[in-house]
Length: 424
Image 1 (tube, rainbow, N blue to C red):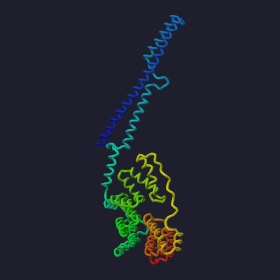
Image 2 (spheres, one colour; image 1 turned 90 degrees about the vertical axis):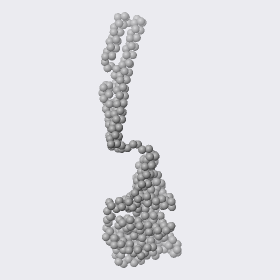
Image 3 (cartoon, rainbow, N blue to C red; image 1 turned 60 degrees about the vertical axis):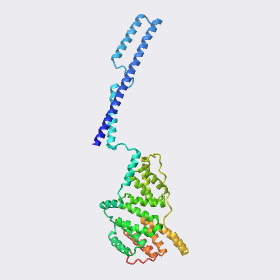
Image 4 (cartoon, helix red, strand yellow; image 1 turned 135 degrees about the vertical axis):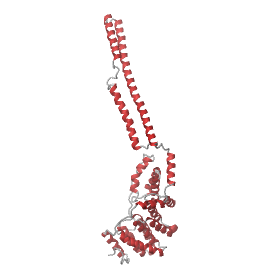
């Protein structure tokens, strides 16, 4: 009913505008006609005065003067009876009226069609403060993590990939083993990664939460970023209040944490504050590297977000320059082998932690997996190296060349791989 009233009100206003414009057009034509008539009358009066002057000077005789007066008087009478007052050189008044009225009709009807197609009949204009208040209300009352997970699970099919049938029993064995090894950080980290691959999102989240609990206050932010990724994936791409709380804890520790900034922007976009998304993603662009996984998305979105946010003069800055490389290279490993044991272990520990977190969060090429296996071998962390080797073989099970390289690196590292899947 409100929609019909809104449409009816628009039509009444449009009709009123059409009448006003049409009357103005007709009035303009009448004024132009009157102006032309007055100009002609002034000419004829001037001619009568000129006849009188010529008669007085003796230039013409009385008979000629009388004849001219009669001729001019006849023209004045003809002017009153005709349409001689039309503007010289222009279209006929009737044709002009039709053209002008046609333009008015097209403008009014066209604007009505555009409004019905793009407008929102039945909705009143919202002041900015009220829009922000509504967005804040949406943010406060959005569904919780559990509800979003339940909703997403009801409509999402489990991910299918080659090797899933082989992975499922291995993950089941790992679950059973961790019942007895409740302090095994590496085991829970591996469990979280593989539960995520299988689409067991709640189990993956719980395993990653255990990793964070075991790490305590010294937990790396990359572990929390991985948990945040899982929570958003499990919620079907939406940022829940629980995910927002995790974001706040991450940003208190590092205001430039990329994953937290990215999902902050997503949250504002989902709750009706694209202006805040623009501010957050603008900052994210400034602190991100060229290979950040969100870079392509935010670069595509920032110009439109700037326009919506009332900053039409915003210019997208150039993309950040690519970094030289990530993770320990072969040269790094070789150099580390020449160091004393303590310095070598300290150097490689830092590189291993960074590379392990990145592969867990984003994946990577087989060369990066091989480097991580080699680095763990140098550190003599055989259990972790074997766990990474097992995962790498699952990831690259369908790529013979990549699998051969990973197996060769494992053999060089002296890992005992007998009976493991993919072993040559």
